[in-house]
Image 1 (cartoon, rainbow, N blue to C red):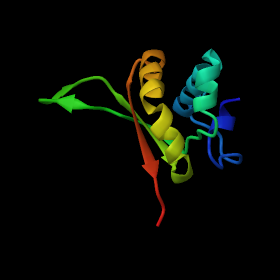
Image 2: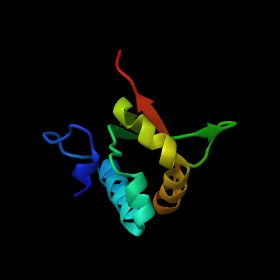
Image 3: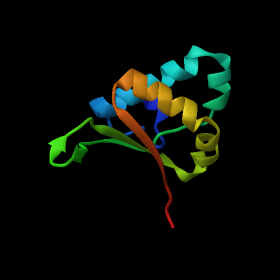
Image 4: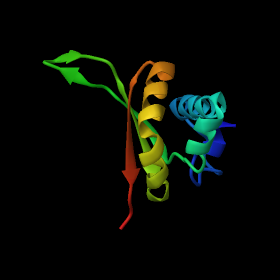
Length: 102
């Protein structure tokens, strides 16, 4: 089910982090009709977990979600709502970046 939220990933299996992010995005999409309309066409390219540190001490980890360039317009419309709800569901900081190939 979470595989449907990933861009051109039909042949590779998802990691556990990508599975969690995909399920969380689907839950946000199903939560209301407004969110479903906002997230229509939102696809994820990859997810990475990055450890952050401050003054040599580990702090909360960050989930970096990379989306393809064709989904950048959708990101502009829903990024605030999506990031806030994903941070609550995943208990991590979330950042969304756009991957652009030239």
